[in-house]
Length: 396
Ligand SMILES: [Zn+2]
Image (cartoon, rainbow, N blue to C red):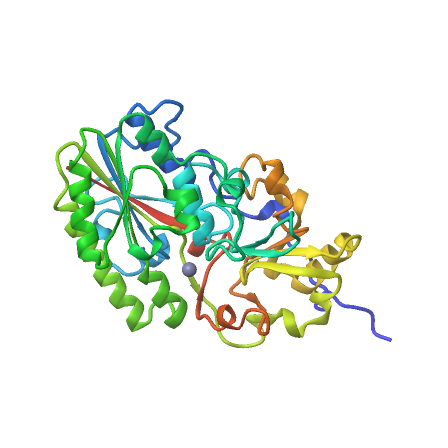
């Protein structure tokens, strides 16, 4: 009988080889505290020291626009590419999103100024330790008390309390969502349907205070990327559109203002074949001993049936080999994937096993997650394509 070969069981990737996000020096969670520190909001510190203080600060978050995708498309995004550094000595540079690179996690990191291990939204779906059920943190299903889930104040609330004029300008549909409540509340939420209207109102809000902090958002680069892929005509069209939005806002900045353009994650296209899309629902080895599958294709939280944790870890490592970084919960926490510390209430939301994609592969779940499993563009893990987002700067 043939012995197992190295090909059958490739060496697992060392957990320590994962490129951990730059918490505390250059991650999404560091942006708002740095801006707020520059406006003398108490308790805030400037973790990104090269951002010179401004009295009026606007953050424009473009959903799904990674640094690498932006840099690869100078023709579609000439204005933003002109802010990416070198030629004019600007400070445009990439920062990391935090792990996982997904919208709910990143919006919470931006708004609270805290890493995922503290704000407690460490994935697209995670287990609620109180109920044992999966909770979708983007759609907030099933309903969970928002303030118990994420008890920290937002930077907007702290800035507002310190007398800074604060506003969020986004789609009206987000006004009363729990995610908005826990990540973006403080000051006034203003809903506008069109991108142009959002830019104009953001500029108006920025001018409305001597010190101001304004957040605005655009979603459809991400939407088209998921559906058609990065580089599809639809995605390129969105990139061209959002580049004009950035310019429109930049041209309306009031005096003493800084505009920062950033994103919640990048994106990577995954081919539709069995080599690149491992189907959890069809794979008995990956399913063995697993009670719940959380996260998303490139950033899985795996919750074991009690007592099977070690077996699940071994099995996932053997099956996935070098394609994923596979860590136990404690290994991922110790390696700093979720930030320097993990709050006690957050600990049980993290999988017994955490699997982050290194290659262009996904763990889909064709029965449990038919919609997500059909997406062309994906994100979640620590590769540069997903993890690096722009931090571009325009000053008046
Ligand atoms: Zn997305």
